[in-house]
Length: 220
Figure 1 (cartoon, one colour):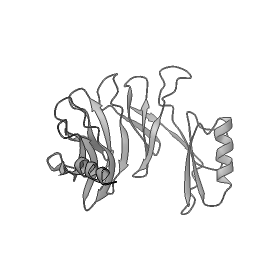
Figure 2 (cartoon, rainbow, N blue to C red):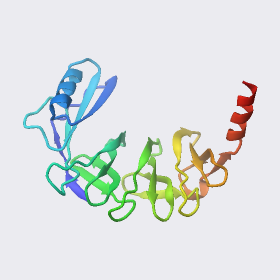
Figure 3 (cartoon, rainbow, N blue to C red):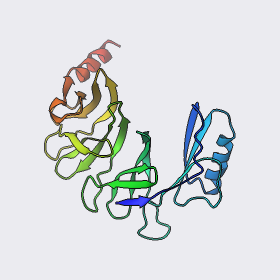
Figure 4 (cartoon, one colour):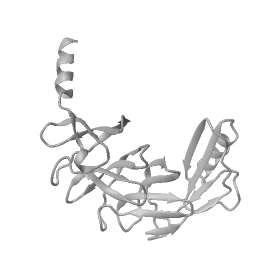
């Protein structure tokens, strides 16, 4: 599940005001956009391509062909996020379905959360200050639930909607050592939950949200 990623001409700009991550940077449109932004003050440009450019473009390019099963077949990368100095995304390598990928230095790693050819479809990525990337993902045992990874350890945090039901956690926000989010336990609908990153700590923070909105709406 590892493959080489070529990095060319990596020249980080000091403290940029903006950062553009441009897929297809070796194509006509992507190359033109990258050149334009790279020439503007305060912009940091990072290009993504299936292959390294023939000549150094003057900005870093991560060249990763994640799907090598056949010529000219894409990996359909999405949900790109920077975390811990690495690039994380959801992609299909043509073997494991849509899974979690990490691009670190010169290596791309696939995390096959739903083992085999079926997809875990990770999404809703959230970069937490505790060093973990939190997200929702699916497997046939737990449904769509809360997961986290630090690149070395990848685990299910909690099966909130016990069994194969989907809690579909979303809307992540960190406060006071906890990660708050919305999820459905299959009984109370979508409510506010929190976790400190351990399965036992994932708990309902309040069950009054839906009722509060109904009461508020009735007074408008």
